Amino acid sequence: MEVAIIKAQIVESQKATTMARFLYGLNRDIQDIVELHYYSSISTLVHQASKGKERRKEKLLKRDKSLKKGMHPSKATKKRAWTHCFSMSK
Image 1: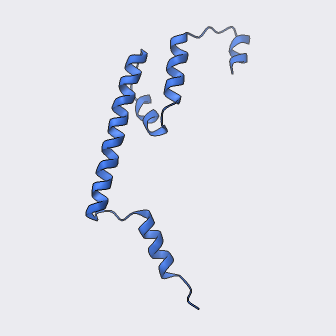
Image 2: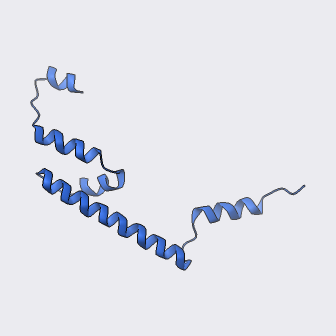
Image 3: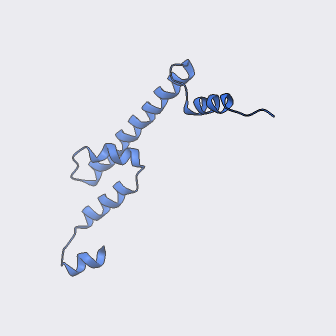
């Protein structure tokens, strides 16, 4: 990629490179949230990533609470139930 940039004589700012590396170093869930927002500086990008991380954490906590209340069965429980129904006895 860098060879192609050099051959095309494209000058990329250090700021853009730093922001791209930071963005693609994030978890995929947080990347998806951050990419939906506009950011023009590294501080804005970091702020958006922090907000995305908090949203992800809140979403996981809500899901865990609903699982404990028995509102949504987990995939593991479903799989175990199906396996138990079709197990062969000797």
